[in-house]
Length: 382
Image 1 (cartoon, rainbow, N blue to C red):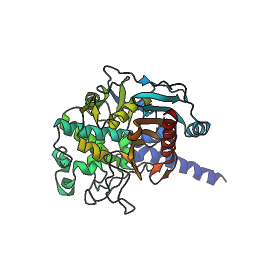
Image 2 (image 1 turned 180 degrees about the vertical axis):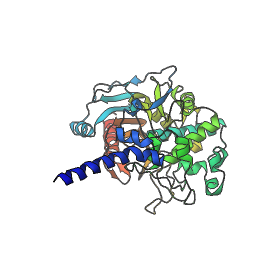
Image 3 (image 1 turned 90 degrees about the vertical axis):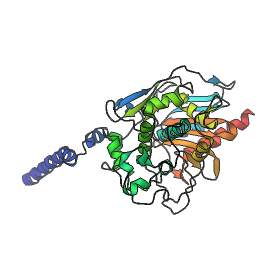
Image 4 (image 1 turned 120 degrees about the horizontal axis):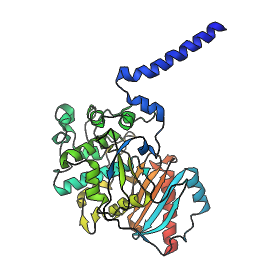
């Protein structure tokens, strides 16, 4: 019995030593942070360094005559509560119609949008092209990032990154602590992590969701504009849209690089402004920030073959599309962060929270649930 106890004690000691030493031996010291924090959360901006995306001259939303009078159905309220929602805003005709918060969050609470940031980064690519800081989506990535100047990497174009069809060997696994995505989230050198990929499929021929593709887009924006992603977002989007609160974009280290694929932190009301921008086809006060052709590509299925060997009918330029209802598009984050745009009804739905439901036909169940409810709400208000 004593020998067994000794063996168990030795096993525990060895295991602890391996856990402590392995990150150093492999150069993956980000694992310490990953172990401490374990799972990503909507308040993770508090554990990262951040760069401000400053607001300038706030333009508060108007409130509809129905504001405060529309009741969320009990079944929907229970469903959203079950998914640990923290915020819901519905904007129609540039007025807030419905607004609801949970769990102590309010209209100015910061919340991590996770991969909603991908859609924001895509917008900034469009802005840089419209401004003439970049040539076009057909520019090779190597024009901006020297690591893509040789071999198969030299074949990758901006459009391939926008459509998640770079053909790289990026490991998107969120459960694997050794994956590039985990390293991108907890690590301190997103530039190296994103640029060291290898190209294993012909670019533009295979759609596979990769956070690394968006991180590369963010690095391209910085190189092309000479500005940080946060500064360019403030200049082209946040301030012209009249955001009421400063946002935070998490960075990999002090004075480092933004996590372009993730980690844009704001509140439901200001996220809705980005949806309104897309309802307005990439214009602010009638002036285009992104070209009309780029906007259309953003919200049109790329139709590149995916892992199921079928044309991708659910993704454009960093924006998701509802298959079979291609007039509706949305940004989405892994824990159920959404900016849903319904152009036919001039409506934006923002939902923030800590959990999301299963997906059907590549669309999370709650996205279709929210759309169906919002459409019924619109009909009842006519």
